Length: 381
Image (tube, rainbow, N blue to C red; front, top):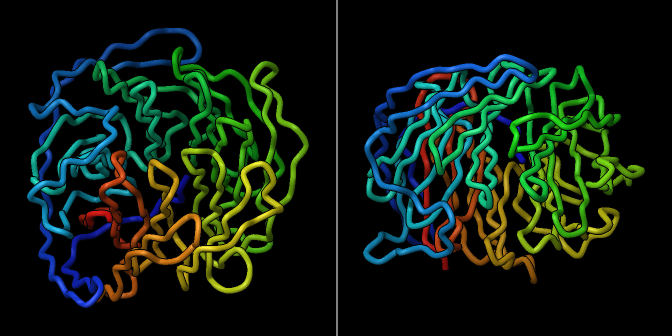
């Protein structure tokens, strides 16, 4: 998944092919829900919020197509300070609202708002288990992981031994969660019961970024921001909850996130220093990360990537540009270049919609922890 940064609002000019478009961005207020709080005793501690949701459209979280009729080819939309987004379909996204401490829904094309789920601490990274309808949120400074049930509106907290850094959805409602580097371990979590199953010891020595191949049952670990460390692959036995011997991959420069294609054939270790020669993202074999079949050349410095639902495209950013690549040929098929914001404005996430007909980038201010953020989007192809 992803390392977390900050965000702010600004005006940007994007160059798309030969066409220049100017975007004017303003923060969008998101109303909060009313809630009652109950807690249950025992271990782990699992307080639950019961919501009267903010009035809005009921989202189809299992959508698989985008209705882009009448949409502009490109656009942008201001949201409160955010570190993470989950695109759904037809312009709808779920985002971590770091101002109101909520997980919120909004359509960045129409401006329509959906539900907003109150959390007990500031949300950082969002992790989506689409099959079960759960959004997980890592929480700033909290030894717990929030689980938002989009089907019921309930929020449950999963107790952890340390703050969560990243997560990767496994099979059958389970989740891997990496913890603050002082623990050097992972937690295997049962989402259905909202409890931890076991701790998994690793020897990374830094915050760990995670990805998971649900077909081959391989766990991928990338040290965050570490120069001279190694990407690692583990086999995982779900029956015994045991990790196999580590397989060491490339030497890292500045780990940013791990992305696994939906068909589970490709692994992208996004690294600010690139994966080898030049600033590129190598196309690693999911069954053996010591083997790659080419690279997507983003230029300095690779920061985020996301595969399309059919695994045929990859959208990526190098902090300032947003590009779509063919997975088969590794060639650029679409490019947004030439952001005009100051050097401390970064694009921290690049993602496809669940329908595959739109791609998104999250622009943030790397300095301010409270200024608004911007979501930019484009139609594909």
